[in-house]
Length: 440
Image (cartoon, rainbow, N blue to C red; front, side, top):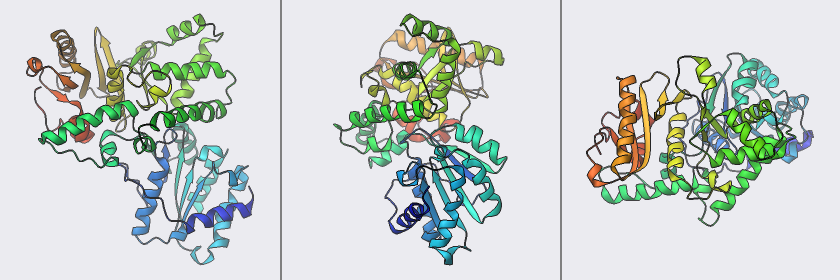
């Protein structure tokens, strides 16, 4: 790394205004005494969470010159090695010597681009008057690199594409309960949310640009976040698995069957390689594999996993069609809403499937896009009855988007989906006390 280029980058950041941004539901602690780590897929909004945190620091009286920001994907910093990182604080002191004794706030974007970054961050944390924030487009930054190297000195957060309530904020729509006109608008844009997903830049773009942006995201995720990052040699296999995942969200995935399907397509690949590549997909934050609820870890391992993807809008980018199986997109959106708040979710299937069960068995969630006939209602009722029998004290909720009038009173604890999303997860976990609960 060229030290003059580094000084230019540091000085340019101080001179330019912070980008305008919509606030997110995630609010980072500014002075926790820990290294704060953020992980999440590319373009989900990690950097703008940084900028919003910087804006709060400025309102608290922090001098702009004591806020340091570096994006390690910046070509002006390339090539960069762990040994070059000492130039960061040295260059900052040379640029702003009068601020060198004050507390600094260091924001490091895409740290996985610098091998060995975690040892440098640990030393800074232990020896400098500094608050450190890092992001990475890989869950490994949190679960392995950050936690292992810092040994109790860090806290970690995941950033997802926009939740539906954040989506409404970005579109300047306010949900007003018991207002028929506003509820109708919220229901209408909920369909848009499922179709195009929650990536912030996509939400704010004109309709004709949305598919083009999502296709670009899909391409960058394949080449930058998978092939390059993991030095993958079998590009065809990874491309096939990525496409398969986004075309089959909210379905059961058995690794043995997947391996057989791939070999039947002429791909010469071992079962262990398929396992490794799927692990890379989950590590990158693009895919989630939900285990079956079972007290035995062995049973969890041997049962198929429920596959979910990071964003419903990306499904169309993998040539699945923007209208493909709205029910699967709906189920994945429900999963993502829950996953934003807790990692420990399961599915359960012994005949009638329960879409989501939390680790304690306190919450059961079922999803059905359209309750329009008696047979569909009967199927969902069977699943809810089975769930209530196994977890009698659990909150047992069925989410829907459309319902036939003659079915409106047949299933207790059913809720209209867009309102459930608007209420927020805290109310779901508390049994939606004071919210719009009740029958269809």
